[in-house]
Image (cartoon, helix red, strand yellow):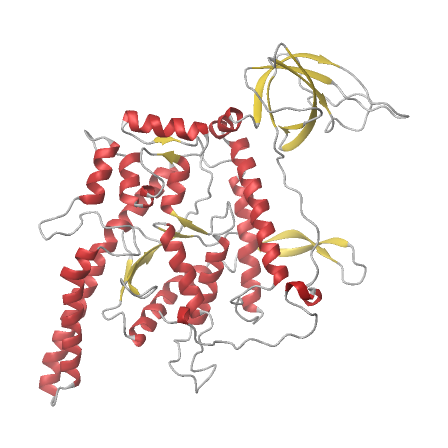
Length: 530
């Protein structure tokens, strides 16, 4: 935790209200996000109990599983979920715009630019908390390898037709959520926690009701009081008035309400199966319908408060202006969405359970690069974030007090002006340390030459972005009296060394090279059983 975050947390405790951690919104929010509020059964990892899902805050679609241990009912739940998610995804798959992409020419081996179609926008899935992201990933993992009756007529327990496709898309959303800065799948608690600092721990911030209580407490209450009430207050039946953000349920709800309702449903279903005539069957069908409706009402009572809280969080986030570089990160999400759309349309197989060595290394390198890029872009977009980097000595700001023109040695001297900056910061500068400032959206580099008066004045030598002439282009060199901000971190991240193709992976990383044995399409594992 940075020093400025610690100070903000202390300020939140003192004032009783969450303090801003950003002045702009660092995540893209779509015009029509799909909100998904899941609920799972206690004691069975990933067994769905129900969900609220939809793009209209006033008309969510309720999905419920009256008996979560029933495989057919679980598949029916997933089929209903697919009926909501897949049309939403498809609505973004057709509108495209021309874009350029750099590819390797197979004949010459050179990098060339080719024109391709890029989806004009991408879907966005929002869940209440980080545990919701884990559930999305688990649902994708346990459904994308399922076989349908059309694919394999002899498969036991065939999945409904579109469930495997749903699993592929949920897996893609889950994998993309691991890339720092991505906005395809967002947890509301994480996004709110990035933009506000509360007076409680980061673990307590995963309770959406408590987090919102700190950010926007009711009139006459402090954030601590409102958060405590959101976490602990119960009604006359002993049920939490602010249910957890899911997907876990409260034990009191499970024991006192849910378990008896599911038991009544089981008895009604058994009685219907034992009915001997049509009149008796009609009566027992009515009892089964009533029992199922009771379970649905219970699921709605636990998910609707969280559904409203997610939309309330969206309202708070939309009040912040979007950061300048958030759209650039969203463009990378659009490329990711377009690429997966093309793989699905091309009939490629589902994502593997385990990546090969090269793919895993590429994913790790991408996440490390995107994390460094995100941290740099957030600081450049947001003065409050930059203040934290300045406090840690990773950046400094000040006023230009002197500019002396100088030139490099050589047959063709280039401008290397010396700029003196007066600063109150204490950057961690060493001999010839490189620093960077944003110039027209591009990083301009300089190197540290010397400091004067115990670091109050810093002398820098500007190195690039001054044009090709003997004299610097107008505006490319700071002038006396200008306010400037230099960072010790790079603004753009460099790519790493090229990795070998998967078929050329050495034996130390899964080789030897050659044709590997194909893994069975859908072997049953413990993770496959919802």
